[in-house]
Image (cartoon, rainbow, N blue to C red; front, side, top):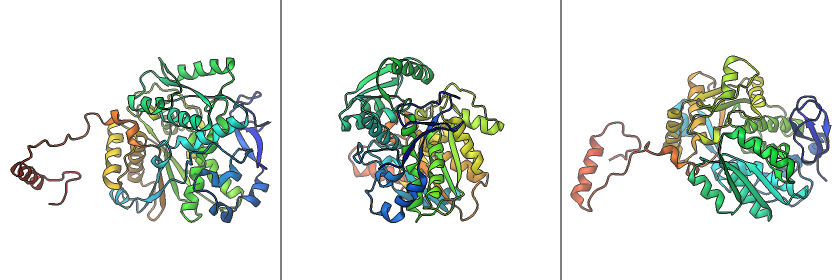
Length: 420
């Protein structure tokens, strides 16, 4: 028996049946999954979770599914790595990396899509669909294939070739649409009115968002069932940071944690930073922005959950940082050099935000800080084009090798140079 009580409006609190609906028909506020927390608290125990499968399904008592066989590529339970090298560089003693590159399609989206597609199966949809800048599309195509469902995927016409290849291998109906994300989303809403498709980030959005909160569950469990002092995550639509907040709150609601006071921080690219701008202006109004950044996965100018991500940061005492493209690239290089993790630009933005927040003394000595690295760098190789040193080409002669090594020995402050 599921602990899902239904859906409720985030604004007016009205209750809805748990169908394929995402907007309140009274106040037009977004809907979210609601649970019988009293019942869940008796079932979602630390002992039971520990015996569960090493993926997000170990938290089934707090997920919005009614069946027992979810669509499964085993997402989640990604590594929580102590980042001593990066921490020393940034001046953060207790820094951890939540490495979402380890998910089945190498991004955090696998958590959300696994839940949404599983719910689509329960609601008897035959076609799943989405609009995406890349990671979501890749994940949906994979999970649809696993579920035996048809998938229709809308992407921007200028999506990165590496992303398109990762999507196309599953042979979905792949449609590249001219225009920005707002136009693509508008087209998807029109299509949804004519076709019985499960759009995971539109009519199934309440279930989709639930997958992201498992990040919070895992962080707490991997820290020995304690809440970190800070979590820093990228903001695109805003759903990830919003869901992490819900996850931390639910852990106290079911008494797995006695209390938690985690401060939530967000990272955006300066070229698409509507949430960071509102935070800076101390405003609740998210002004849509025209994306102009190499961080394609953060290029959502009118974020659906932007106001809730904004509230998550403000209400918990966190902050939202905006970082330049140059800082993003440097963040990617720093993370790779210091911790051996090749992140997409969104991960670089998180590292740049960590540096900014540390410089502003947002983290006290000894506090635990967790940085969420949302996806792998091989998804966006174009971002690094012309920004990395090419290899030194030599003839297969020992004299040329010795000449090159001599140059290395003479060089000063060469990042990554071996100790000769």
